[in-house]
Amino acid sequence: MDLQKMWRKESRKRIKNQLRCERVNRNWPLHAQRVLEVFREVAAEGDKHGVALFVAEPEWFQPSFDDFGQRNGKFPLGETAVILWFMTRQTGTGVLERTEEGEKHTIDYEEGAQLVVHHSPGQGIVQVFFTPPKIEKNGKKNNALLYTHTYNTDDITRDWVMRLVPSFFTFNRVESLLERPSVLDRMLVRWWWFTDIRNRRGYLEKLQHVLTPWELLMIAGATAPMLWLINWLWNLLTPVNL
Image (cartoon, rainbow, N blue to C red; front, side, top):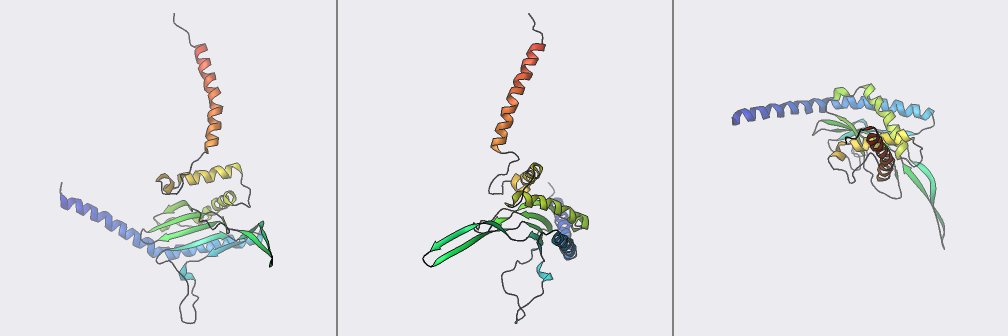
């Protein structure tokens, strides 16, 4: 094996990927602005229909500072995202606690689902996540669905961003306690979880299936009589050689 030839080939691939990453990272702010504009349009239209949505911008779109010219808090380095999410809503349930000091009411809230368009400069990749709603009282962090991704920011057109929104609405209907999804909605979201590349590679905490064990059992129960009938007809119609 020619060692120099092997390394020349490897170097070409590394340089090609490095140039691709640099191009994606250079163009991301422009495409992030496009995503932001679409999300703002969606949120504005949602207001007309009585649905409250919030749009979160990448850090470079938020130039607010304190008196010393710095912003307080924890901020991600390098990675940025544009986020569209449903506002927090009351679930209509809660807890009434009576003590000698008096009564205390605790109302449960559901934090809305999020559509996250996320950029990772190290990989030169833009990923789209759907984060499920969660009830604030349990404090449990939910896994986010990796819906799609691209290694080329040229893919991030207005139509590409717009096509994400109906799927996000479907995801929210299925995962929210306050919505009523159809059977098709549920099957679609199950399929998205099943085809998430992290699920195929076993990265998620729990393996996601298209069908539940109960559904598999029902299918098996419904299939058994049909198989028996097919076998009976085959034996009936097949001549026996004496």
